Length: 125
Image 1 (cartoon, helix red, strand yellow):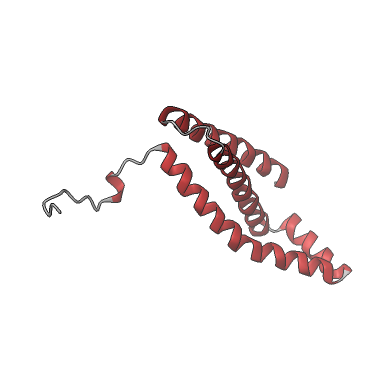
Image 2: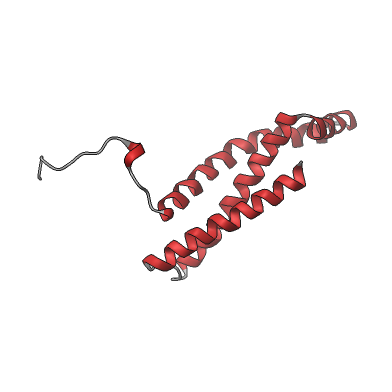
């Protein structure tokens, strides 16, 4: 093993390809979904507990900025994760495995996800 190989520990100078960014974002959105489900399950449980609990959840989601932001964040993570998951399913079928088609699929993944996230923001806000 060559001990004199260059070592770059400055992450800000590393240029990652779009396919790596899409892959990392897919993993991050999976973690966000896992954590966000705690808040959604709490709201769901509270809304089913009684009419007063349901009214409190509705009021919170209509008037509280933080609650809307959390819901938008979880829905955004779901949209991105879904689009990236569909792309992975196509890759499992043998499509988008070449370098150029993989880059094009990754860029399409980002564009479709951004459009869906913006639509979710319009719907929630």
